[in-house]
Length: 602
Image (cartoon, rainbow, N blue to C red):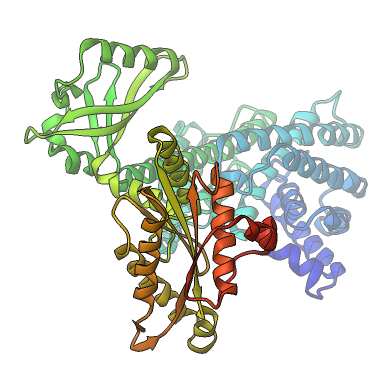
């Protein structure tokens, strides 16, 4: 809150605020007395009560000294009430504190004047907070003015209640920008204010027997609710109440009754009901506008979603479709409204399919799955369909919503996800995950057919200097070129994979011995003999290759990969740019901890 921030953190002394609150309290007390009849027992509208609650809601409980000071100063300055009224200062502070505590406890919304439930709770808080003080004030006034029993209690209660319900929303509305009317309607608010005052004068300045004209003001209440938000309504209710109090106190207007008591209660009832009606009207309008905005937002989302949406009633008559429905099926909205989804049926599903689908919807409220449908041009297509049953508060189905997407149009998404999961993003070769899967399948096939297979483990020689001299971007481009070269050196049935860094593998299926594997290795080494053209540069690198055969060198995937890696390490030790077959003694030299050291690049 801006005002609270000034009090607490911007160097303005709190006593200055106390004096300001006290001065405003006295001024409103004077105004309340001025509007009341000359011979007053209880002021009909005690506006300082509304100020006290508004100040505490905005500044906090620390504002109580200003309220107490204003309550003490009011009787001497007004000179029309006895000095014993100064004893009502504790009651004024207690009433404001109790009302503020109840409102904060029961109303959690940041904008409590915009929702009916919040307003009803706030009104109940005001009713409960003003009752103890009314009993206290009634007890004091009884002896001073000669009232019998608790006659003054209803007047005190309604007077304080009316002051809070009129003035607190007015202060809150004008101290919070969130309650302001829409931009550009300031002149409209001023016009409403002038017209409301003029019409109120005409309504309440007539003779008492002129009939009930106050209902004319309902037009202005509706105007404020529809156009001018909380600030306009709070201003309207306060001004009409002030005009009504002024003329009623002088014996004019439709609120004048057969006695002073009836007149006062009539005025207080009018102001309380008027303020409550105004608050509920603006809250109802605000909630209606919020609901419309939510519906508009939902409609925009549905209109812009790439999935087709079709909404039917409980009898499956189409109520609405979105543009994606038209784009997918070819049917415009005006061509399908009132019809049933059967116009999309492809004829590929039998009655049992649809019976099972609707049985699941009846039991669980939804169904999803693949279904064949037919476009307007007769083309049959496969879609993924979600059907949702929408029920009312009694659990009865009101509508069905069908949300679908053409599976063909999503094929690129599936392919992209598959590529990210199983292919190296840099070279587009199978990654480690897919490599192990294909190695497993190759071993299964080799066992079943009792044939041999070979695994080549490759490491690019002198790759690290390329990165160090030319940068990682050039190094990545070189890896892509190497991947293309390796693809050309093997058959389509073989697999080239990148394990990471500058390490590659080749799975050779259906080989007839070590000679076939050696032939492929020689082909790869020959391809590396010539410099590679990479981004305008000639880059020379070599390749060290280790070869392990199944079933001669290993009996499972892990062993085969380990032995091929050990053979590659031996090729490095033998001077690089060559290939080596796995031999048992290599395992003792290399050790199985190769994979705990991470990829070797060089």
